[in-house]
Image (cartoon, rainbow, N blue to C red):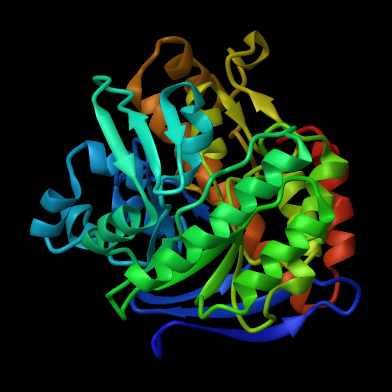
Length: 374
């Protein structure tokens, strides 16, 4: 794709962290970046204009969920996701592979593909590499994912090997099924916690004409040291001139660990989900807005944050909205969390440019703690 390519601008002298520009059909974005998740073609409670104003570049939508409701044909009738959800920036869709993991009680895996039971009505669904690519082409995102199995943790070597080899066969089938030349297709590295399987998968995918590469099967309950090894077992074998995407990662400590190892892209529902439960990132550490100590606190949520919420409202008012279960409260808290994480990535990129990534990392570990999952 001539209109989709990675331009590496600078690599931190003391780590593998890299600053780059990703050129896409719907605009250029700076890397490393965090991508807000809009599962059902909406980032919960926020308008597309608000998402753009928060500094978001790429946002995600979920192939499995949109296939069930409203259906890819309806999205296609609108002209694709960009028009359907009124978002003019880059969009990424997953393939449904994560649902193989999350809906483990309702699926059957075979070589041809996976049979699901709909989480809505129990009706039978079938996904294969060809079906997933067909859905993603109708959805029309700028970046689409190969169909894979997100391998649970822990699993036996034999299970992991068989699954990883099948994922590679599915990746090749997905490449063959792809017909649109205006969408970038990413391969997904699996292999569980096994070094030889991760290496084998990464090398095989790197030999295929993918536009970018994802690292899957991480941040699903494995210990921190295993998470880091999964990245270490994958990244060195991926092309340096293609984007690297660590799927489903949104906690600050895990993002830092990924960037340090040369990862460019991250996504997660974490900041929006935490906000709806009253848990906030701030430059002074974590805040649980429901705590009684904020009932009479007239200070902003974060005096160093430039978001709409922090510029206009007090902790006292935000707590009042939250304990009263007012919709505005969820919106304001979501605005803050999304902006905080995007602002965090902006500062991180500047640290890379100045060869100060490691100092930046330690500053945030001190603020939030390592291995805290926030």
